[in-house]
Image (cartoon, rainbow, N blue to C red):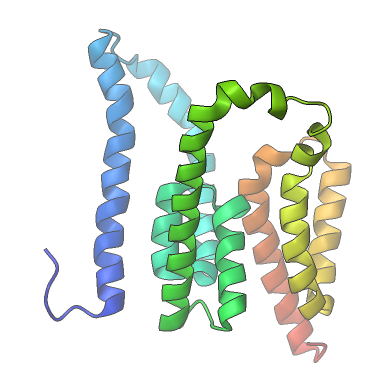
Length: 222
């Protein structure tokens, strides 16, 4: 129960923990419910082997994303983003753009509020669009599958990140060169990297950029 003398940040962490733990329980309830309803208990050995093969990667990604996203999104925005998902391709751009427009830092109380509101609005809009999509998918299928619209749908994400990139790269030209070169080299010479690896590559790029920024700062370039 929330205490009367809680500060804003105390309440953020209080409710953030509650919602994140609640979502974890709900996500685990689905496979448990399927197992019970269809009388198909999970095979212990198969489950263990699957966890051994996949869990370490997700633990590493989760650890890196926590260190990467929290300074950019703030505590409230991070709690909400980790519950709703789509951080790198939706929540992060929305939060960064809102912080930029409001001219506040993510680690300030104003930035906390701006980031959280931006991510909350993004989540609501996304949910509404998904609901409309489910309702209208059948009547709109002929239009959406039209060859004339195919090139536009293929460029949605590049257009989104391109617009954001122009703003931030133009303000940090010297700092942006290193991560751009790193990503170009990796994606050109490592064919295995694709859109499914973005959850790993974004934190890697951020940590690499922080390291380069520190070196440039010590050399007096920044």
